[in-house]
Length: 111
Image (cartoon, rainbow, N blue to C red; front, side, top):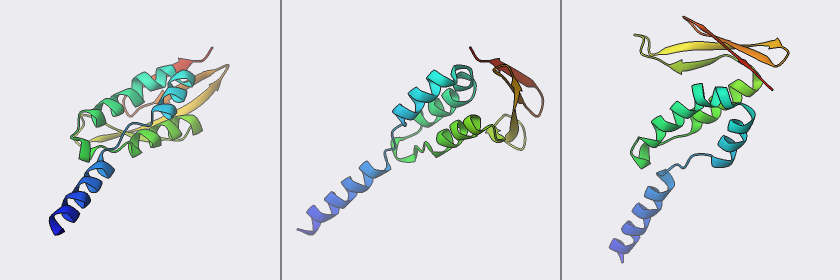
C-alpha cells in the first residue's frame, strides 16, 4: 500500500515539473512580432527545450514577450562576464521599434 502511494506521488510530482511551452501565447506573439520572436524569444524557448524536462521553465519566455509588447526594458543573457545585458525598446513612430543594447542597436519596422 505504501509503495503504491509513494509511486503515485512521485509520478504526480514528475508530471507537474514537466513544463510545456505556452504554444498559444508563442503563436500569437510570433504573428504580431516576428522579428522580436526570432531575435529574443526563440533562443529562450530553445534553451528551455534543451533542458531536462523537470528543469524547464517558461516564465522567462513570458516575461520577454510581455516586455516587448509593453515597450519596457528587459535583461537578456549574454556571453559577457556579468552574464546579462539590458535591452531598451523605443517606439520610433511609423511602425518602427528600435532596441538599444549595451553594445548595439537594432530596429524593426512593422507592416
